[in-house]
Image 1 (spheres, rainbow, N blue to C red):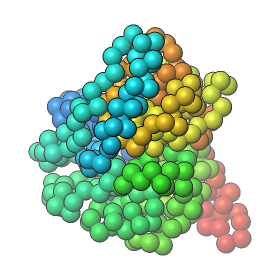
Image 2 (cartoon, helix red, strand yellow):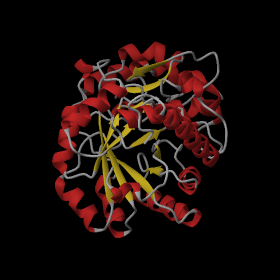
Image 3 (cartoon, one colour):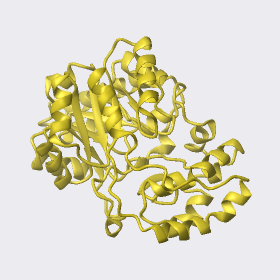
Length: 360
């Protein structure tokens, strides 16, 4: 990987930016202090809310960190389909004694305002999800000294990232928890996502950019595997969701290893875009009928998810999790970075013992 990025953090461990209150400043600071790269999630926050979290993070650590932005979404949702889904959710609203949200609450997530803040108050790293920023945006961040990353879920998307001028690509496998960072939301491709190792290999052959591998990684041995496949660092989300500093709801943390939740599934039930979560009642009952309508469905279901959390009902919450969720370890985030780094070192030593192995 370009030394411009690797010089920022000693261990090839990136904490995934998890929106919705999980990636709080305390978590990002703990990861960065331990030698990884901590990330704030600007998604679903105002520009000022993002700025306040950046200020708080800077008061907790002097080490480099990143901020993640959601790309504005095109208007292609079918209003009639959203209305039908809203009628289907009427019973949920009654059960949780709340109103459904307004599906027309905004599409751009304050993108331009957040970019303005990040240009005026530069951070070391900025990443983008749900699409590719323009070359003008990338260039403007480069001018203030910011390193840029963009998520891709296919080799074709990785080539678009390279054309944008971004510094590195985050190759997100289908195993990843939370939202798939596809550049276009095409319902016909639901369920056809690539596994991480296959994706890393294809992206490595398609572009010359450094690769950060994301998707289902929970152990240092898996980090070693993606590094051997051609990645330069690994991005972990679910592994950090269970840590002490994570801002995730306690029910969400407990659900990761709760035997009631045995598997994950990609679903549109909560947001209208494919996202991997633990299979619960809400996902089972509404997932098959949720339309491709992001962020309309996200706004629509937001009060339901908040009411379910308040009621202590994990069956109505969006329990985002990757396929490796049962391997989650409850410990301080800094300690997890150290454990992962130790596991990685052991795996590299083992690799060096094989004929042709280098251990690097």
